[in-house]
Length: 281
Image (cartoon, rainbow, N blue to C red; front, top):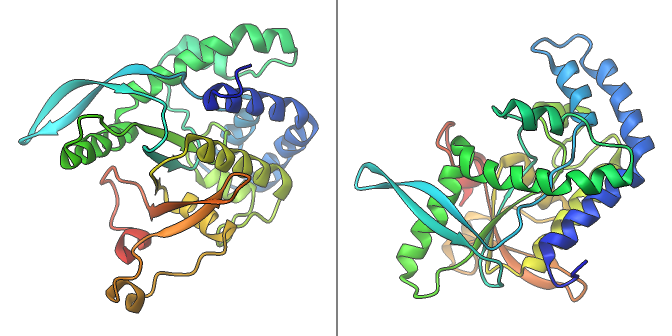
């Protein structure tokens, strides 16, 4: 493994973590029945299937990504190159969705193998799927890549800022309400299975630190709550903002505790009303 490649590093760490926590994961599966037995909409079944699935793995980069952006009121398709070097933008979500149309890959993702050699043999297929998902899951990723593209237009840089996407948790499911209930998340902190939950968040934050971003943009309200609680960050008061001292937070990452600017937000797809973090900012 190349320790200088953050993506390769985090993928191996995630797989090791999932294998180490087999017993915990199985015990969580039993909780799905207890928590969601009175719920409608198939939450119990989705929760149980989520536990059996492959965890999130990240796309290898650099690679070219075809995106659709709005240009003068019309959709404009363009090819951008996602690169891995410091000084870019990292967008942060909560967890990977499981809205997958490809039945073959869906069946593959449903069952995380128990044997190490099977995991190794299938790993590249899963990573290839992640790359496709970034391109094809337009409802979520189109605004993300579009925002990155627009920032580069404003900066008018000859060397465009790279941008990447990271999720705090590696468990594949929709909706996120399942994770919220399963871990008993209140004000950004889990009530149940704290170690398993916090282990994922710790690994994700370490990964973000290895990417050395110029800016972190959290685009999920619950993920914003989790990071705010993790670093015990206060609310940005109106007085502070108006005094011009600060309009964003900073969080320490990595062994040296280097501080990185971070902006909190909810979804940027425009499907909901303005969230508390966007309103605050």
